[in-house]
Image (cartoon, rainbow, N blue to C red; front, top):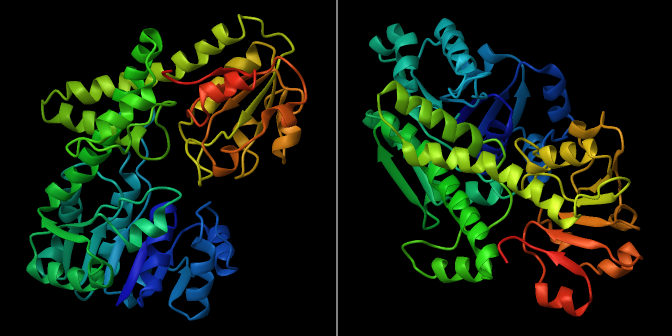
Amino acid sequence: MKLCMIGTGYVGLVSGVCFSDIGNVVYCVDKDKKKIDLLNDGKVPIYEPGLEEILKRNHKKNRLIFTTDLKSAVLKSDIIFICVGTPTKKNKNSADLRYVFSVAKELKKFIKKYKIIITKSTVPVTTGDKIETILKSLKKKKLVDIVSNPEFLREGEAIRDFIYPDRVIIGTESNKANKILKSLYLPIIKKSSRYFRTSRRGAEMIKYASNAFLATKISFINELANLSEKTNVDIKDISFGMGLDQRIGGRFLRAGPSYGGSCFPKDTKALIDTANKFNTDLSIVKTVVNSNDKRKLYLTKKIDLILENKYKNKIITFLGVTFKPNTDDMREASSISMINYLNKKGCKIRYYDPSGEKKEFQNLKNVKFYKKISSSCFKSDLIILHTEWNEFKILNFKKLVKKNNFIIYDLRNIYSPDKMKKNKIKYFGIGR
């Protein structure tokens, strides 16, 4: 099939590359000429393991085309995916849908034969209805079907998630569109995965409900970790014991920093905003958002206790600063507020992250990026394990730091408190 992905951000690029790899011709469109030139040179502007290799292979076979020409790409395609950003509006909780509606207005100008238009972007319930209103004249002529097909790609695991999805959700009342989309997804739904058709509004809601529920699990275990610390219980045991119950499951039950990234923070807020518009109180989701905001402050203030409020000239090293491993995404990462706080306290901050230096810290005095773990840890007073990159899981801290009386603050519970005690290293974890 011939597909058009409008927007080459995370969702559009990963989906486009993966669709081309299963045999489709994919046109990836973006207004940003610099990004398109970069992609045509075989370079990927995001950090996603394995993506560049697949991109180069399919670009070479002419199955993957990068262009700024929206009209040409749409006219050549059978299915059009809207993959533009839906960020949170400034000073509000609602999703900013201007880019989605702008695309719909553009499409109205040049569609002359039947196309399936799919919202792949995360959009609030009823967004598809509004797109359909914009394209009302085309809908009357049966030239378009508007479908919701939300993505469930995890950063750092996106390629695997695309090829082996837990589920493919298709929201449409059109039998014609459903038949075509089932054929499109056939190569991957054969692999024991699930294809689920629902209403368009249902598909839109499933995406938000899924993210809100996962955010709830994270906030729940983080709050239990606070209680575990005060009752001398190890939260890892609690997580494991709970996770053995198949009704609960162990995923997303790992205590640590607040949730971050491109999805959970904005999607929980947008869901609350949608509920408010329909006069519905989502009190649980509101509590989750509030709990997550408090989490950042709670973990930061714990450093006051660890250092006994003695900050001046302390050398503090962050191992990992992204919100999770295998991504360069800094959106809503708790490291940002922590480093800003410690910087104001007069500490000397070092950080190492496998995904490179971060613009968020470039203008901060006494905050420096190191290219090696060893140089970032040398003579540090406090090492904060912020992100659980694999290369942080088997470190000899005494060899790295080369001084006595340093402290480990393990935000991911990577290490054993007993082993740290045996090695005479002062160690603090989460909920233990």
